[in-house]
Length: 454
Image (cartoon, rainbow, N blue to C red; front, side):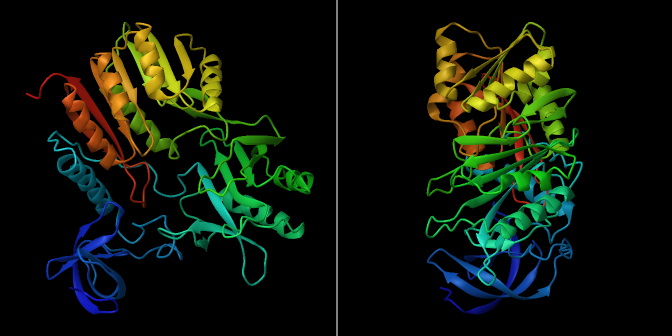
């Protein structure tokens, strides 16, 4: 058994779901971050358990053919870009295998998994960023960045290669304002301080920018000066304060105050216009999202007589982009602001065959079923935790022709697909879509059909 501080030479031959390289020493798995499959590394054991160990690179003895130099000075410490040091084709291979392995190992599902659809852009693609704020221990000034992997320790960074270039300028303005007027950063340990997070969102096509400061109380000093400084950038359309008083890891609170503008920005997706409020879900990679939704529409294969049920509909993006292909769209979303956005989006796009409900997906779906609402096709796009068994059972009682599952987590996808199989739906095929280049995350679209596998 390996021991802490032991040094060894290790060949990396696997990759974890989180993007950490895996080697084996006398049959024991050793996880070493910052490695690539094919690397031979000298490492030091920093954690030794009965069934596995964690190592830290001392030296790369022989680099993998997939290894490239990282172009980010904090990629080895930040919790974001775990694949900044490998080529993009190799990253896509890792993600393809991640999806295939999850379906087979967790769901015991054998279906065609098509090659991962690569993102049209791999740099500056994110349209949303949430930056935690802390106090610089030396100067006392506010400092922003990203959490280190599996921690709440902030790695200072204002120029992330995944975020729009404009965000760096806005961060500079906000930090300058906070330092000038002594706006204290929030301290997680004590619960004291005012400024918790800086939340920025930009419409990829419209260019409109939302600035939202997450604070512990609504009484924030000198907001007029902040507004004037931010509005020097003509793309800033709205400025808000979100109030989060709780000692929690959840970023946004329930209350939002408007400082400037109308509280939302607009963007265009697949020819439709969408209004976005702060708590509304919207895919962070615009161009990749269009690939994802086109694949979902292909799997939905809607006809003019079909009724579409869109669960976890957010601001209505999936349902509204498919509304012209079917007879009626019903959308369900639990966040009230997102439902209002969805209704506004339907109206602004002149779509009259879409109806949106606010509520828990399982409860709302059951209510629609009891009201004898028929659904020919059902699309689900749940958060990372996936679907509840109750919702899966409710979905299948509609007896839809097709179910399209859009997933951001292959593990929960595989688990849920196995439950659908028990309810009489088999997985016809699946397609991974890379919406998050340079990170470990990957989206997957799966098509389920009623009946037994042939």
